[in-house]
Amino acid sequence: MSSYAMSPLMGQMMSKPMLISGLIEHADRYFGNNEIVSRRVEGDIHRYNYRECHQRAKKLANALAGLGVKMGDRIATLAWNGYRHLEAYYAVSGSGAVLHTINPRLHPEQIAYIANHAEDQYLLFDMTFLPIVQAIAAHCPGIKGYIMMCDRDKLPAEHKIPNLMAYEDLIEANSADFNWPVFDENSASSLCYTSGTTGNPKGALYSHRSTILHSYASSLPDGLNVSARDSVLPVVPMFHVNAWGLPYSAPLNGAKLVFPGPHLDGKSLFELFEQEKVTFSAGVPTVWLGLLTYMAQNNLKFSTFKRTVIGGSACPPAMMKTLRHTYGVEVVHAWGMTEMSPLGTAATLMTKHLELDDAGQQAILEKQGHVLYGVDMKIVDDAGKEIGWDGKTYGNLLVKGPWIIQSYFKNEGGDVLEDGWFPTGDVATIDADGYMQITDRSKDVIKSGGEWIGTIDLENVAVSHPAVLQAACIGVFHPKWDERPLLLVVKKAGAEVSKEELLQFFDGKVAKWWLPDDVVFIEGLPLGATGKILKNKLREQFKDYKLPTA
Ligand code: AMP
Image (cartoon, rainbow, N blue to C red; front, side, top):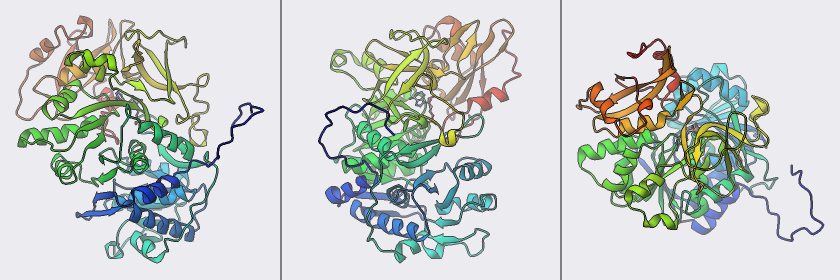
């Protein structure tokens, strides 16, 4: 794999490969009694510990071997965050097979496409997703069998799913006597398809080495900062870039894991946070919206929750302030991509920032942040020339590092690197201290009279208005300027604000020529499979919209 020169004097340390099985072995041996708690699809709460998780993962590994699963085979999951899904993470990758986590929120046609493209051999799924499995089974001839993650008595009496098995039968029938195989750490471990807002989804194929390095780096104090004193509740799904690596970094550090299953509404989450003394969580902005609305309506406060990572799309400053000031929760704004395993940057302060007042600190925390060691980044202009780090000039963001994609699975899309760097498709600034701030996705940026208008800033201003729940800004055709911003707004229940009041609210907060040309109030925004606003859908919906200024 390596094409680098060898020194005449090589180091003399052991060269034990970094394998995912090592994480669960470590958690069993050194944190065996630490808990894993899951709210199950069945409705109840399940609790056990890392030792029992390891035992069951080995039983599942034996079961998979019995089904003929070989190294490199792809084994798919359609599952929520839960203990059985965690067992599959370790059983599949630990055996040398490849865990392919499929996003169940995708359209069944897309799921079938992905499963066929990946050449999945077996599919493990939560009971909730039985209808999806029934819809795709006939279109996925390559899948040899389906494992429903439940007891036998929950299997449907009638179905047309070939070779349907109950997960608990497999666990019961197999021994926990299993030695994890040792192999090259560059072997593939897991596969995630990008959400693919345009064209077919493409696969990011992680390796054991990239996963372990990402687990170390993401655990650092200025990253997720996960420790054996934490009770970690990943709201981010295990089918969205491996829940940002938490199923790996929690056992690496011996943290308690709390899985919410399918119950992601504000009430269920709040109860689980309190019952399981959650200290740390991670998720996209939309899930916090639900939780914070529920807490405000019921006048609730957290008793143990102290830190959360928010990423996946820009965290609105208003949300960050509410979490920090009203609820005393530290917010780490992070940025990354499926192609980056996913973590690239996180916003935390340096010593010199501790002297700043709250507004000064908030301004830094609102950025997407500093790289974690291992990731290198730069911004370039359209000709590919590097742009200076002044915190103002924006350019196309490129990254490289050992947990960043080199090429998509089956080389879809051909060579993706530019001179060894991965083009992220994001537009960003970097300041003199190395803090990166995303202006926009390059395809969402509004091109007005040859200049660029970043939509994230406009949306952040809109959602800081007390009557606004959600906002999205898109460019629509303008005869003079090519494109001008149109602001689409969802109001909070029972709140009122007029178009004129909202536009006035922007005064002094953004450059005058950035002001949206119009505001349209709508009932809801279309969300994609990972909880992000689907701007391409909005652009399609409003493509013939006539601006009053046009
Ligand atoms: P995905 O691969 O689905 O996780 O999407 C990755 C993309 O999400 C990135 O390229 C960004 O455009 C966007 N993204 C992720 N985190 C952030 C963030 N903190 N702020 C703004 N955009 C983000």
